[in-house]
Length: 375
Image 1 (cartoon, helix red, strand yellow):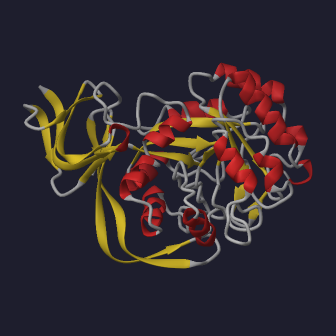
Image 2 (cartoon, rainbow, N blue to C red; image 1 turned 45 degrees about the vertical axis):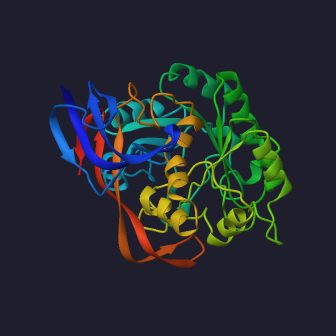
Image 3 (cartoon, rainbow, N blue to C red; image 1 turned 120 degrees about the horizontal axis):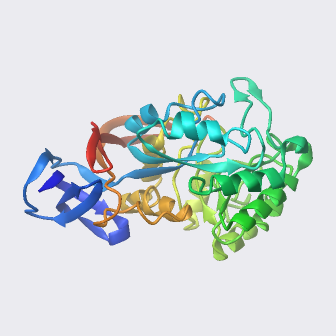
């Protein structure tokens, strides 16, 4: 007997090329079967008329709640955004990753996996009307200490995070990124690179990114945007994609522009991963949450299956997770039940621009570890 069966939903699992009305069964915390007439279960949920997708993975969040100024409550956020895995994008550094692990990660229901910030205190000073970049003083950046802690936490961390730009590294320029790459290389892990306004210029950052590294805020507005003034894609961006750099949205409060997104997508340049960059100053808008960020891409013309792909298997692959991102039997029993709400919706970017839509994704339930968790 199965523990749980989701019955009659439209199963969309891009990793398996599935888009059909099927039942999904869970047992022992894993996906047990996909098909029809699967048999008896301790609990059956009728999800007919809804979509069943692999548990959503938000690749860029900040959920060190109570330990950093920008953190949001992970379980509360996951429930209204339909996520089963939250990747924290460097909220904690070598000096406080231990507290993040004990007091938030291990205490939460939702799965949380962090990038380790190259800066010792992590992102310690982002708040309303206050922003001090953790990489703007190299006294806070020590590669040796970061590597030592990364080894200690190797069962948990999924990569190394660095933020560079005028607002985050300031006078230190590209140096923190070079140091972070050394740690990532020594650990055999991907780097997630944040780039805001120059300096450094985009070209300096792009040429350093390796195959499998992640450029977050990839559709940021000008300056340092990936789209040229004539609407084409910048050459260094095309070269980075050709060598295997992963492009992640990381919407946030200052890092996603509709004009950039439309220019990139007009050129056939789709994001590899869709993520929210939810934190204290973006959760109330303009990012709001994962589902609204995904809904923006539906409005911009990205097919539904590709939006799901960019929010499930592509996110898992970006951080080298092979146990989730798909409903393949034997993998983690995580699923999200979605619906499309119809009405009049206004979506915002970080520049104050808006677009109107007649549909928006909504969460109707979450299965976490094979049990009905929320909905």
